[in-house]
Image (tube, rainbow, N blue to C red; front, side, top):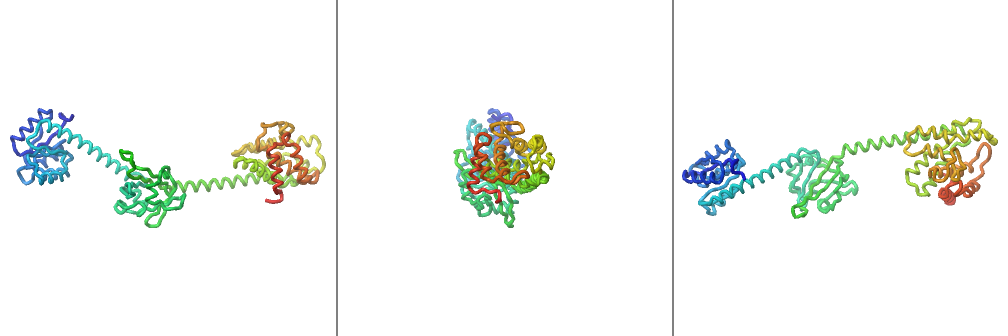
Length: 459
């Protein structure tokens, strides 16, 4: 109820009726109204008084009647107007409706009728004011946000385009509003390469519910990378009434992604160069095994691929294979190049190279356990390997693969202390040790590769 806080302006040129209405209002609990007798005075008092509601007689003395006065007040104050009149002819009603009054009471009226009409007018006016305020807030928000926002009705016609969208497409709001979306605004889906049509927007069925890469094409022919999102607008009956399209300028994101890709590519090149440099360093000290690490890495990767390992594991095998003998830089050159059989002491020294390799590679932050793979590449499933006598599943799968590749390549190549034994003996070695010394899956994959034509002599 509004009674005690309601400021009422009464516009009535008959004193007796004005006094009667004043009495009625006070009996209903309202404060005494401010009364004026002419339309001109009503306009002046309304501006200074800012009333909550105006009770207006239609037929007033003076130049302005009540309807003309109400029309003037619409542009000056926001108070709702209720007409109080003894006339209900068609022409009067037509003129009155143009001013959009909040009530129309025919004299004579009951107190209850007056009270109800005032309260309903105040309530309706408050609701409409709240809606207008929310609309202004919404419009201000749309104008100020940086994303391009376009709303469509249920038929795909543009109902709103904010300033950011107008700037993006180089078009005015008036030109776009009321037009079909795709007639005025060109947006190309980067995934399909097709223009996004009005029909596609209306039947998107969630296609653009998540930001999707697209390109906005401006009136001047420029293109702007964007992320497009489309949401349905729903009415109270849960029916789709239109769409809201949001286009976020992705220029900075694209630029950042390109810089990141360039940076990652440079890092990968640096990484590859580092791995290559380390491999060359170890092979410079042992010219008889030059290329051994590269060939082992190639075979080990082929085995891993045939076994169905995923990409990261294969890359770990490749890097570890390329560097698996890096620890030999610790071994004296005369032992590495010795043409005869190594003594027990020399062999013990040679067997330190996996540990030395681990110590060197553990200082590098590889994304894979390269140091551990290298450390274990001479271990055997039955525990007869070195340096730690590991067995079974304690040995990394990548190391078990590398062990098979290393044995096959070493036996197939020349060494200072012997000529090449050839591929058949090498394959027989891993076949005889399959499941005991060597990983069964790795051995089977290796043999299958050579049966399918794999060769160390081809790239």
